[in-house]
Image (cartoon, rainbow, N blue to C red):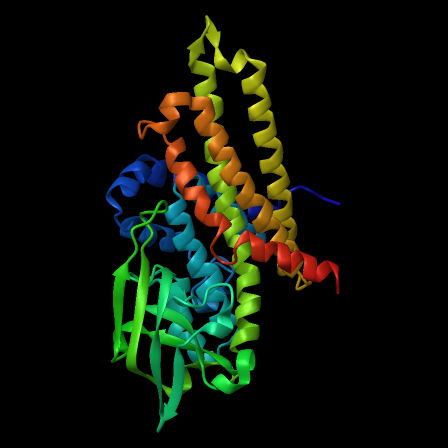
Length: 380
């Protein structure tokens, strides 16, 4: 067993770390305050190859492995969780299904712009009445002539307000249940009948837009179906398995940011004539945070290695997402406690880390669903 990273993995980790420290961390608090989309940062991440890390170079990607992806995403998320989730959605939820299930023509037309960082992509699954149970979705796609006519509303779509492209789930045969779900590639700029609805006001990741997507007799070409009719549910499950590695990496980045801020602060904050780092109560908090974060990292890297080597990883990605997100939330709360009253103030970053961490326990499968996925694999 070898725990050493390859030279390529070390290179992208260091590149992402330097970029995040130089370009993202100094503006993260302002992005959080203003809720501004980090367009310049996204463009620079695209230039660095971070928006299509695992996609082959022939489609505009970086041609690297899934461990590179996880390592880079951890570093970006440590600086700004909003930037991290934008990067994660492009890589995991948009690029992956288009590359895995798309035709050559679809890859050239719809994958290359996002993998190269020239455009953003999103994933349209969740609806007001369909979260953990996608069979409750109401969005439909009906073939008329040489077009699909789409009707329905998606909600809580990360980057939905700033993306050009989307992989969308819709029923092509409602009577078939899960087997009637199909996937489509949507070019928002060329889809009559589509519009962006409301933007959500959120607790955290405020620089990442979360939008409603509205389709009213929206028309897309017949060739924009991804795969074949009825394959959407299986595509969805595989896509989300990989997406959970991305969210686990985002969560780990948030947790590490909380730990680093807490360590630094504990060395300078004095009470009772000594730094609070000298108190065993503080030391135990820091030790527990570091241990759980390292355990999360090992689970993430194991899941990424399994995906890279085309081995089953559904259970492992769920475990990574479950532990990393729970740990990030807990570590952020502990960080606020270490900072005391200052931790509750926006003067320091730990309150932002606490707000950002919460969503990682919810999206791309709640942690209750993660436990069901893990149990299902154990009981097969």
